[in-house]
Image 1: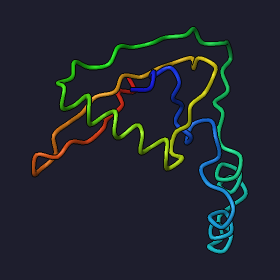
Image 2: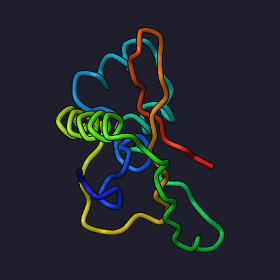
Image 3: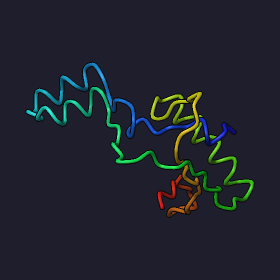
Length: 111
């Protein structure tokens, strides 16, 4: 399973989409602010540099561990997240919740 320190959600720091998706947003009349978020991403600005924090994952069963590992691989493959070499300032815990039909859903605890 990839180290959680190496995963950064693209929607926070990286562009959400590029290419034809940006053109589609332009066609529906999205304003410049929205187009900027889609094309270059968002980087929160802080008055002072926050200290680093790493929260532990929730306790997981072997089935949940396997599910999370599979989900992370799929998120990496799809480009929703990417591996990074630097340590993020905050690493949020991962966990699972049960959905109807005994299916699992990946969750992130953004306390």
